[in-house]
Image 1 (tube, rainbow, N blue to C red):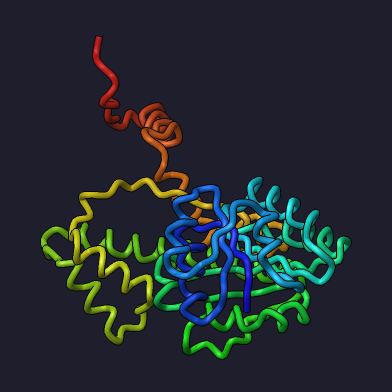
Image 2 (cartoon, rainbow, N blue to C red; image 1 turned 135 degrees about the vertical axis):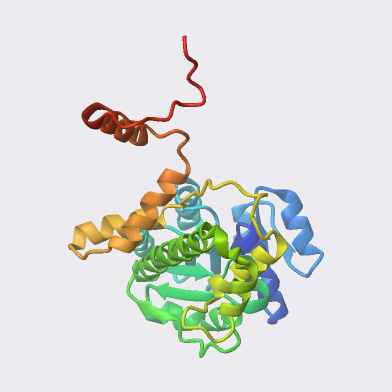
Amino acid sequence: MKLGMIGLGRMGGNMVERLIRGGHQVVVYDSDESSVAALTKNGALGARSLSDIISQLVRPRTIWVMVPAGEITENILNSLIEILDNGDTLIDGGNSNYKESIRRAEFASQNGIDFLDAGTSGGVWGLSNGYCLTIGGSRQAYERNRTIFQTLAPDNSEGNLYVGPSGSGHYVKMIHNGIEYGLMQAYAEGFELLTAKKEFDLDIAAIAENWTRGSVIRSWLLDLTAIELGKDPSLESLSSWVDDSGEGRWTVETSVELAVPAPVISAALQMRFRSRQDEPLGGKMLAAMRNGFGGHAVKKSENQHDT
C-alpha cells in the first residue's frame, strides 16, 4: 500500500523503515525536517506539510499519526479531518486516552472518515522484532488496511490484531502498560532485596542472566534487565528518578471507575511518584510523629545546620 506517516520519532521512524522493507510506499512528514530527510534517503517520500502528504496519496487514503498524546495529537487529527475526503482512514498509533479516541472517532465519522486507534508496543526494538498492535474502530477499515498491520506485526503473529470498537485499541494498550508498571516494580524490588543481603555478595547480573533461561519469571523485561546489568552491574550511572507517561494513571483511574481492584498497578504508580521526590514531606512527618510520641531518634536533614 501507499500511506502517510506523521511523526518520525523513535517509534514512528522505525515503523516507516519496517513498512518500506515490507514493500509499502510511505509519505512522511515531521516538524523536524532532518528526520524527513533521513528517511527519504532510505526510500520514503518526503512531505512539507499535511496537505502535501494528502496530495501524494491516492484515495482512499490512509494516514498514520505517531506523535505524543495530548494537544499535538488533537491538533493534527482535527486538521487532517478537515482536509481528508470521505472514505479515507486516520490511524492514531500514539498512547492516547481511549476516551479521547472514542470522541475522535465520532467526530471523524461525522465527516465520513474512518478512525482507527492503534495501541502500539515494541519500543526501539520494534524495527527488528515487529510491533504488538491492538486496533479498535471500524472492522471494515481495519480489513482495508490489514496489510499495513501485518507488515508492522512480528513475523510470528497471525496478523489478526483487531480487538473491537473505537477506543478499544487504546484501552487494551492502556491496560498493557499498567501491567508493565507492576511487572517492572516487582523486578526492581526483587533485585534490591538480592543486593541488600550483603553477606552473600550476590552477583545480580549473573542471577538475572540465569533467570532468563527457563525460570518461571523469565520475560522480555528480564532479558532487558540482564542486558543492562551486564553493562553496569551496580547501575551507578543511573538515578532512581522514574517518569510515568500517563497510561498507568489512566489504568488506576479506570480501576476506580469500574470498582475493579488493581493494588499492584496502583502501588507501582505510587512508587514512580515517590522516585521523583527529594526529601519528601511525608517521610519527615513520620519521623516527627515518632519523635513526638516516643522520643525516637531522628536524623537531621543534610540541609539543616545546628545554630
